[in-house]
Image: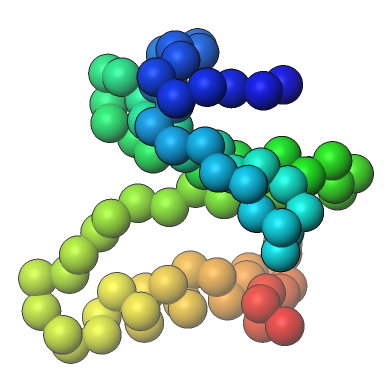
Length: 87
């Protein structure tokens, strides 16, 4: 699928299209019209597909409490005994 700057598709508008020789594909940057959510898509014919969703959640202080909560939540449980999910 080839998208063009300014094109609307499924509620998103194409903001930027550029070729990436390093990644062997075309990089598309889109923005959701209603919410302003940003989407980056690399079309490089890779068979393995992946995605990531992230949110801007700037903390009100630098105590590190949110990082501690992150590790606590991702530490696993009796039902899901995963100690280090990122290793």
